Length: 220
Image 1 (cartoon, rainbow, N blue to C red):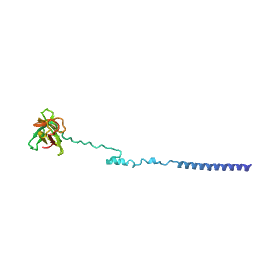
Image 2: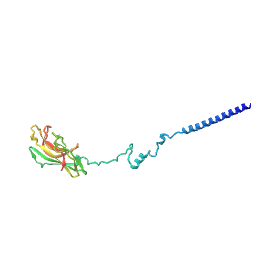
Image 3: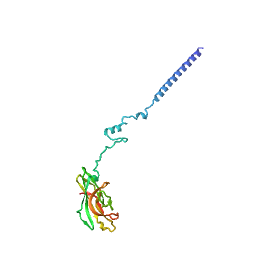
Image 4: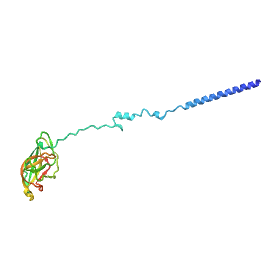
């Protein structure tokens, strides 16, 4: 009976010791497992490194524009030149002392700036023979002599520009229906208003013969 009780105690003690050893091993394994499962720093957590905003700060410091920025160019004003000379501010005269040859008479058509400010005279005048100051043109208008290119002529008040006007005698054309003309109707370049200069000549009432030829204006 005593031996049996001793064996029972020994078995109980051995079982208790084994259980204690088992629990101790489980506790250490759990602690090790918990320690190794601690999350490491993710790559995203390092994206806000101190040097990330350096390009923007550098651009702001140096005043250079970043690729996405835009800056408007400063507006510049272009000074306006003088306006075109108009009939209302011009005074016409004709200088007929240029002589003539082979039935033609060479004259200078002169337009003087009678306004209060400068104006631009450039190109060819429209010129026709007319019956009177208010009459319609007679025959064909003057043909352009483009041997000299048109140039910009700026006329200050009182200054003048001149163009060469050639008149061919109406009697030189057998098919001319001769009719008297009181003078010249003149349209300044790019103007629809006209001027009149008394210059009695013979005209052709039919449009076939071209009696007049005009050059571009030049500074006088």
